[in-house]
Length: 127
Image 1 (tube, rainbow, N blue to C red):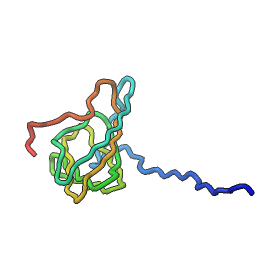
Image 2: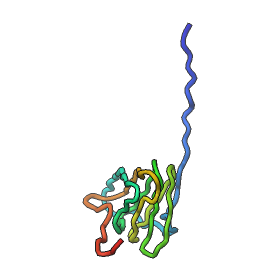
Image 3: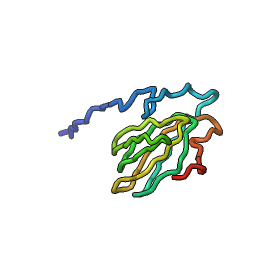
């Protein structure tokens, strides 16, 4: 007798489709030239924060562990929980921090171009 296995069907779920960042601002047009797709894994320890920065390129990601708080320069905040998607601001200064009780693991996906920075740091702004 032949072994019969029941395969789970493939299931797709669209997680997000938007043309706006988390703060409601419209995303810019694509950069000119050949695109470069970049994926980055960030690990942010409990109580740690990234410095003030802005992104010259569009990006979005998913928090796979923990909870990330994003703070814009004007004080607006967004908390992204485990399993949630975030579409980052483009050209707006902000920082991320881990106010939670476990490390944050964040996967970010950037639509960039050759030799374009993913972010620009602003060390002149005190945290």
